[in-house]
Image (tube, rainbow, N blue to C red; front, side, top):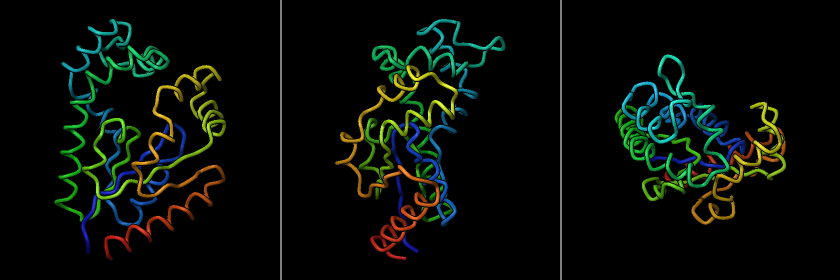
Amino acid sequence: MSRFILGVTGNIASGKSEVARHFQEKGCALVDADKVAHELYAGNHSLVLQLAAEFGGEILHPDGGLNRKRLGAMVFGDPHALAALDRIVHPHLLVALRERVFSALRVMNRVVLDAALIVEWGVQSELDCLVLVTAREEVRRQRLMERDMLSRDEAERRIRSQLSEIEKRPFADFEIANDSDHEALMHKADAVWEAVNKKFGE
């Protein structure tokens, strides 16, 4: 069986994680960047203290843990604050993600990395293939409002904090448009999976 690292990316509420989990069911080890970030915040107290020094003690829970919701509310819509967050967190996160991917490759030949910021990080060259999951902005906005109980303005600020799909498209080997239902999304994901396997060999 061929060995490859498959990246799945997409902007917030695009459905990228559904696609990544579907690929996991096909026989890939899954590395979820959001889960790794959660673990990083929980296990790296010095990182949390750096964030508190930058953004203030109000981003901490009473027990000293990071209040990610409050931090998110502060940085989304503020490019300077978001850049500061990226500067502090992303070097640690990228090290952790690379460690997870290579650990997974020792056990399985195929790894899928689920991460929204693959293009922003500039790490797409470290992957064998990149799948971009897209959805119309109005669809993503509605999903965000319903899923995370956000106001229209809050959802809009989160959408605007990321590179546009147009900017990410040139870096993708495959694109999956997720503007319909789950069944249609899985059908498209199956087609991409077949194409990836054809490209790298069964």
